[in-house]
Image 1 (cartoon, rainbow, N blue to C red):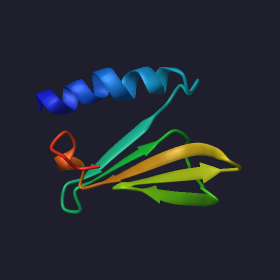
Image 2: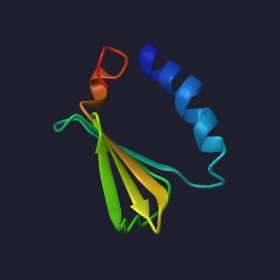
Image 3: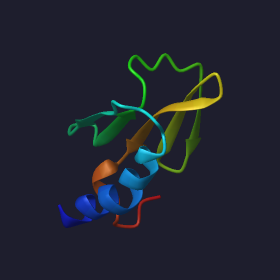
Image 4: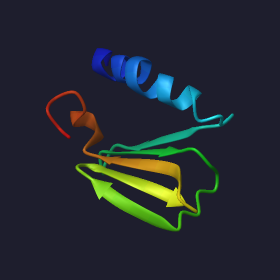
Amino acid sequence: MEKIVNLVEHEFAPSAMHLGKKNIGVDYDKEADTLYVSFQKPQRADDSEMIGNKIIHYKRGKVVGITIINASKIGRGCS
């Protein structure tokens, strides 16, 4: 749990504050071990790219969400 708190506090929170969004949705699917972060509801992404274990979702060239596969392994060598 401490690793997740550190990740949110030191990596996610500073980045999220600069997005200018009031609502950020976060969902975790334990069975799939996948974390979904939405910066826009509904996302309606029109493009995406996979980088390591992350899928970045775009709408008109702007990031509208991130999917993190194997999320429970964050901080344990997963990239």
